[in-house]
Length: 335
Image (cartoon, rainbow, N blue to C red; front, side, top):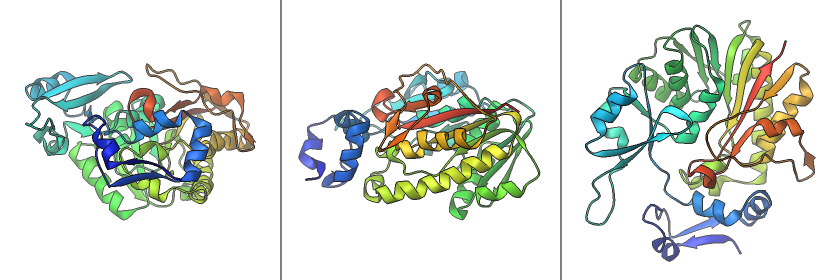
């Protein structure tokens, strides 16, 4: 029998849990796998909860104090501990049924590019990357631009960012967000990420926030549950290894690379980092230390064993910090 939560079950939960369909199902194989990886009931509860709205102040156009001043009348703003520009945002004036306004993207300040609507865990990869001003950065899978615009803000619009993606619809969103946020140090490319191996340019910093099975984002899109399968995971792994390898090859000596996903699958996370460790002898993992609750990385899963070095990576489940699930690895090229 499939694990599920009925509409009646949901009605007895907190109002923050949306009823997206009459019956929400978890495939038996999914339940089997994730029961081995975490406390499945906690994961299920968090994955079905409405995700907290969050914004990141665009310091190219505004500041945290200014945004607080502009929004404080109608919105409660709470800081995101791991990103000083991040703010959880909640409407102060619920209607008679207790529901609160959530259309943050309709605010004038959003249209003007003063802030970007961005999930709190999504802010972690650029924070870990820590790009320097006047450096060269490759955002390998950039669209729709949350992390590209965050990186540009951190760099103060200096240096060069190459923001790449393949999907034309997503590239349109990327272009609009680049313009809205006032980026002037960014060029957009449309190609398979692997094609960068033909490019002579090396980059000081590379973000490889790669396409994945997305099981850390169920609370944002229940379609993840419908689309998930072991076969999908294996197809993702093949693409991820190829992209990660290309990214590291294009990293300049002593450069920094971040590999990240929003999936909880070990093969797509620890497995890909293990592949990089096995492939390159000039690769070093650096420990990620941030003010948040983290879960242990996976030591072994379904016959695969991973290096103890991978414990330096960051794995957070949706239930850890009431966010999306994320995996982040910080990688240095030592020579």
